[in-house]
Amino acid sequence: MNYLLNTYNRFNVEFVKGKNATLWDKNENDYIDFTSGIGVVSVGHGNERLSSAICEQAKNIIHISNLYRIPPQEKLAEKLVKKSGLGNAGVFFCNSGAEANETALKIARKYGEVNGEIKKYKVITLENSFHGRTISTLKATGQPKFHQYFGPFPDGFTYAKNIADIENKIDDKTVAVMLELIQGEGGVNPFDRDEVRDLAKMLKEKDILLIVDEVQTGIYRTGEFLASNLYGIKPDIITLAKGLGGGVPIGAVITTLTDVLKPGDHGSTFGGNYLATRAAIEVIEILDEYKKSKKLDKVINYFDDKLVEIAKEYPDKFDCVSGYGLMKALKCHSSEIRDEIVKKTFEKKVLVLKAGSISVRFLPPLTITKEEIDEGFDRLKAALC
Image (cartoon, rainbow, N blue to C red; front, side, top):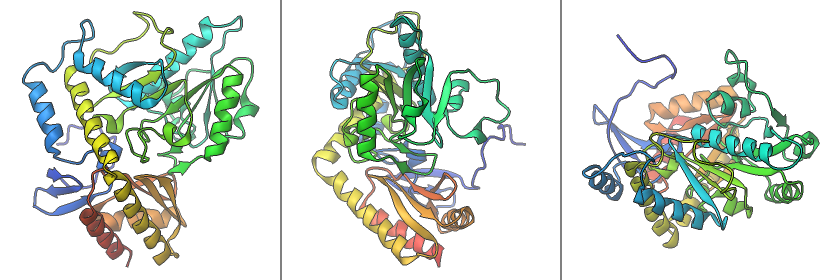
């Protein structure tokens, strides 16, 4: 009997060990992992430095609660603020992307409540967006298929068709705009950089907050520490999770609105504990070195060349390549083609992801080697024949 709730359509495989972008199942078959646990295992499976940092911390203190100072939490917060480029900012730690986005919404709602004569509470998000599976973040998600059965939802959310349509949705009760710079679950859809910069400028002039959901794009996934850095903008609030802990659950909110939340307004029992923040520090230090040495840029370019090559080689299946860094997708001509490719690719022992209706999504570990990329694409081509 299976005692798990039936919330996932799982592939019938059991992995027992991993090294970087390679996994082995219980029968010792090896798989190339182009998913990194949906963008989580940023420094690869079995990373020795991360494992050592986790074990060292676990021998001392794993958790003590936020009633007391937590030195690695303070160190991580400093790193995040300095690398974000936001200047005078603060950090709140939680356990997931949905929790981080909930925190961002609470900050925005309180800001709209206490600032100005008119109380503002409305949040504009985009169609095809994805912001989480809690009730509020589900409502913020601009995909009706996720809303069925779970109402009634909190009010105050409006969906814009695209960046240009956001201004049309603004009224005197609008407190914030929340968006992914590259829609992940929606299909790996990057927004135009100039449009985003113009939007950020317009929102600043109107005193409307800009919340950027970097749960998937953050921590060097796009080649820069944040997609916000890549786009050249400074949001009021940035949310992080996934790749930050390298597999250890952690979420974070970076915001310039440091005086909005007061003691008792928000909290998290587990958020930012010793183990999670120590792991995240190690992840950032590893990836800082990868970026500084140009290894990250080289592997991004190599992976991109492989994707472009395969798209050109199979024009009957693929329309184009989308995304930035190691957050990429092959856009297929139909959902049927996409679903068949994902199925056959798994049979050839390569792990890829679905996104949107027609995208094959790639989120490999940022430390993936050229040899692993070559092997993965050789198997992918075999699946396409």
